[in-house]
Amino acid sequence: MLRINDLVKIYPGPVAALKGVSLEIPEGLFGLLGPNGAGKSTLMNILAGLLEPTGGSVTLDGADIVKDPRAVWSRLGYLPQDFGFYPSLSGAQMLDFLLRLKGVDAPQGRKRLVDELLERVNLADAAKRKVRTYSGGMRQRLGIAQAIAGNPRLVIVDEPTAGLDPEERQRFYRILAELGRDRIVLLSTHIVEDIATLCPRFAVIRGGRCVTSGGTAEARQRLDGRVHEGIVSLDALDRLRASHRVTQAVLVEGSMFRTRVQGDASDRPDGFTTVPPTLEDVYFGVMDESRAQRSTPPIAVA
Ligand code: ADP
Image (cartoon, rainbow, N blue to C red):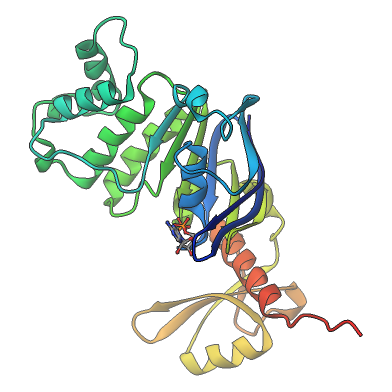
């Protein structure tokens, strides 16, 4: 179990990137969702032992990551957002270099470990090719190969599917799903589909705070019967915004908007149909709520 308790991070400025985040993350795939600037990378860097928090604690199976990051490094695999590669090395050379850097034990020899890891991420056929010639998806898979070396208990992946084409994304999903069978895999992303595809549990952070967390299926069920969809013009959309809670409006065919509103069935706009809720509905609903709460003026105390 990964336990995050009241984590605060204030950068010089001061910028409050985390304002007291608490989460309990069990074995399996856990999604951390939030818009750009929400504080996801800050949280990931603290969990990876690379950044010291201003306050709060983090424990992995009882061991304190903040007090003693070295003690957990060997049980941790990290694929950061900007993973550096040496383009003139082959995939196998690059991985060998990274394993040495990480100090991974290889009782049966590093060459064997490199081969095994490349096999695991479906890069065996490209082992001798220069990393320069790899696609974005292949580079990400090489990044995962170094992250899982040494069989870590906790694997952290930061925005792993940004820029991947749909086929590469699916391949990457399969690798992550397999990893999540017997360890904690924490996936940070602003892409809701990543979480919907992979994670039974998730949290949303916004403005340095956790605004919701729990099971993805339960979160969707809570919205059952409350999401209504219709296609409207821009004028009608403006009117709808004044009377309903519009959580999504996606342009279709250049002039109309596929629009989703959330609310009681009795309040469903004319021409709209009630649709099964998706995780996007959960996400946009939560974002809308937390925006509304923030813009509510503080109550003056006499
Ligand atoms: P996310 O990963 O969700 O996009 P970040 O953790 O990168 O969010 O950033 C959270 C907030 O902290 C943002 O306002 C960002 O500008 C700020 N921030 C991130 N890193 C630094 C830094 N090194 N110094 C000052 N502010 C930072």
